[in-house]
Image (cartoon, one colour):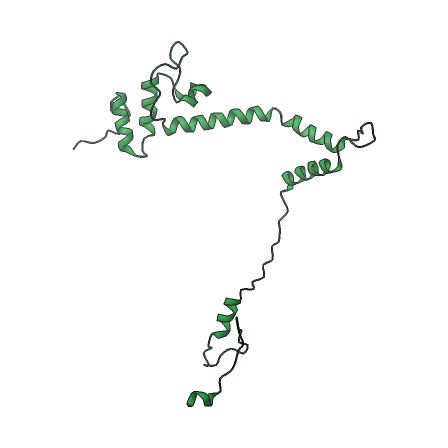
Length: 189
């Protein structure tokens, strides 16, 4: 009985064969993808820079991106690219967090006035800065929404329902026109 070997060292290292295994596996491909990247590019994905991740392949020995662009970018490359780009962006922004907080605090505390005596930072800007800080520390306040159902069709249907005792409900609702009760004597005729 032939089948796929569980030992990755016994699998073919031919890139075409690896791609075929990846397509056949449909989801169980991580070991093959790692092997493909290692064999095809001779450089672990962890060592690729951000531009290499964006292009889906590493640079050649001359530092260029020569050759055919890969027609398929593996989920592993995409996942690593997203992770590294987010880490890079977060690290870059985190370096400015202290300055951003200090700037907001300076806006709130500002007492400077222009030549005409008007405040340089108006009250609305100060209020918005305060609200921004409070909402990010404590969260936005919960809003209470009250709904009043005035659906006349539902009320009319409810009024027309006959109860178990066989009598209709007390207050019939009329959507259009007028309500008239028929005499029982008219029914007998």
